Image 1: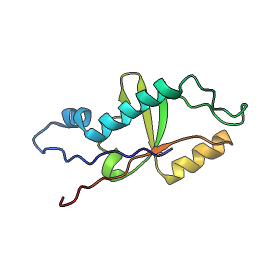
Image 2: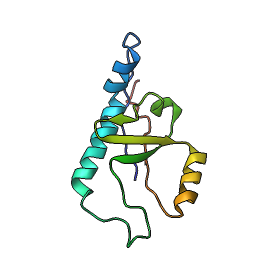
Image 3: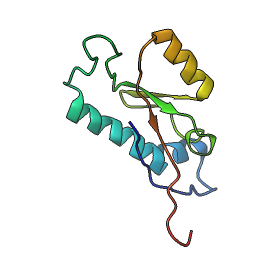
Length: 112
């Protein structure tokens, strides 16, 4: 599952905690997770137990140093683990089945 987030520069004069909370990527990520849980949380997507059921309160996301280093790992009841390629492989082998993750990509508007 891939999720596209909007690009937002953060002003240099904001403190780190404030910029992490107000980062549009973070707003988009956690809002998307909440909406996915609302829409699909009641669905058993484990494929008869062959896959790990999606836990919307403990999500995985592909690490992108430009984006995810600025994002919080928790907001409210939701937690996100940002995994690099090696961490994804270890996680996959540990569970011996498919797990789902999302990915944030930069979005640039024309002229910026």
